[in-house]
Image (cartoon, rainbow, N blue to C red; front, top):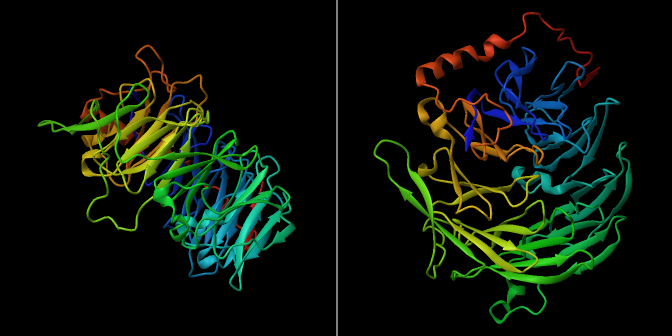
Length: 513
């Protein structure tokens, strides 16, 4: 494991989708650094009247633009130069909050959902035009993105709305977002909508409270098939129709498979070539070691001079994954996370019934390949976006302060990544964030790790491999020198001396190139 030097950060810090740059939002500026050498490549000065709290800070899909939003204003800047600058004022009703703010299917498109599902707004930064669509179906702010989906390649927008107690689906063309077709799906209370990665299918599923129901539409909006639950259910699931329905849905990266999880221990696999259920994976209540199944148990050691030590041992006897804690809600059950790796060969799952266990399945062989058992509850799973079969795992609990884990089929269990030991004071502060750098396969797998004050990069590289940032790592920097270096990197010293023109053209929408 190779670590970079630590760099001053904030609560709003994010790597670009390309993995080549990292942007950090401070009180008055945005600093953009290159991953190649961790040097500042651009400093964006924010207007003096742009106040906190910040509701959104993100990169555009192409890694060319940055978006910064608060309750009354949205700013979009060019990330690496000053070639683009746009401002959206008062995108929602004063006194309310955004349920969602983000880029659309292109860099020049910004989508805003007002709280309580009042409206779905699409701003075209190239033409300085805006379109409002009433009543997007927003179940909660955290699930606001479930009500819309962009079709790959053609960029059509599929939007789920609800008016007078009835669900509606509408299709809007790109770039004008004119309505092309709308219809009422056969649902009582639709939960979400999603396009397949190849754009051939539009999938809508019913709320779990109304049983199993998932609708498959063709790309032009015609119903093709309706799934109302598993075919030939096992005897223990014979009363599935009386229970809760679909909980989560996930397409494979190649769009050939669809995985459906409900509130049982089953995972239903669909072949999208025929849109039929072809496979059912059952999470066992006990795990039996065998040649084709790796079972790794976490061991936490207590160090008198440092942090907890996390190691993994291979189980040689039958073991049952630990269940929920006593204070967990009794209603929590079923498959809460489903993630396909980029090769679509492996799928990782997590159950509410066993929140500390990661299940990794071989889709082609229809077998469980690995079970990773942790002491703490798992908070997130993410496959590397470009490198096959490489999984990042994060857990909850004080013993995991600054600790993440990386697993691949050839490793001797998950490898601990303790980035807190490379931070000032050897302790993480505030909310932790971890994600893969989406670099191409020529670079070793690399991670972006951040707390509220600092960030650094970690490369899962062999000793003879050079990390993406070259020789700019400093894993053994003394604490005094590290403090001195952080003072030199203060964002206050990076503000340009000249004052820019912060004048605005109008009150509602401003765009200049």
